[in-house]
Amino acid sequence: MNASEMGRIQKPLLTEAVMFFSEHGISREMLFPEFEALLDGLVAAPECADETVEAVFLQINHRLHVRAAVFFTLDFDLDGQVSRLWNMPLRHLAEKAGRGPDMGGGPIRLSCLGFCNTNEYRAGMWKPRQRNGRADLSLIKQAVTGNALGIIGEDEEARAVLATDNLQVVAEDAWYGGNPVPLAGDADAQTDLAAELKALKTAHAGEVTEYLRQITELHSRLSVQEQIHRQQSENLRIQHAEQLSVAQGELLDIKHELAEQQKANAALRREVSRLQNRTAADTE
Image 1 (cartoon, rainbow, N blue to C red):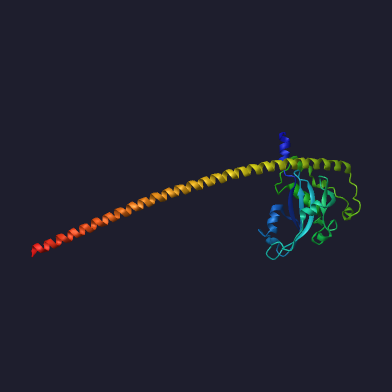
Image 2 (cartoon, rainbow, N blue to C red; image 1 turned 45 degrees about the vertical axis):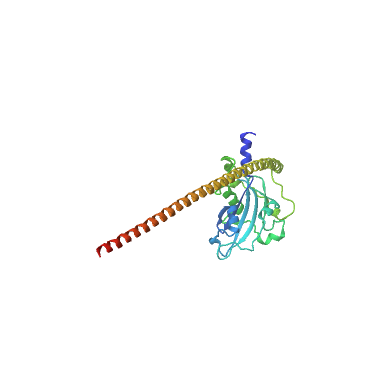
């Protein structure tokens, strides 16, 4: 395996992120672990207190191409915590989403109000629109291209490829069922997608192998550390026992010396008393 293939294996398949919208555009960007912390109540969003926020869940590849987008709403309470009643399987919706617009890397998987295969969640979704003269999809693409989230791209030239002005959008009427509107170069796009899927599967298999190797290595290190810890604990126990034995011996010696000293003191007191009595008798 050459260096190029190793580099491909080490790259993440997809980066998951969430973006919040306000009336002016995108107001907040976060990676999915940060969003999960928000859902778990570990952090709050006081700026969203007592509001229903329009948000989008994104899956982004290492070339900074959006591959899937789920447009959902999020309810916050008065303390800026996410409502405990909120529950949407974002990854599942992204995986089952229909074919959407081309945002630079081929048609994405799109799930939004009016374009969702699961009726159960439509009430908690919204439809991208124009915002201050800018399309929400263009704002998303611009934010992803800006890469404020710090996604590791394939190379610096990848950003130049993602020109926001070249955004290709499937006709809006195709978002609501029926046959998709054909796109220019659709066959080439399908071929590219198939090639990319094959490459991703190969990379995934390599990643799994690497992760298993790392897990095995970590287990081995942990076992060694546990053995060292047990040995150190045993050494400390023995050392403590020896020190305690020495201290107890020294204490016994001190007690013995104290008893001898007390006996000597008692003998001296008796001698002094005897001499005092003899002196008193001689004086009489």
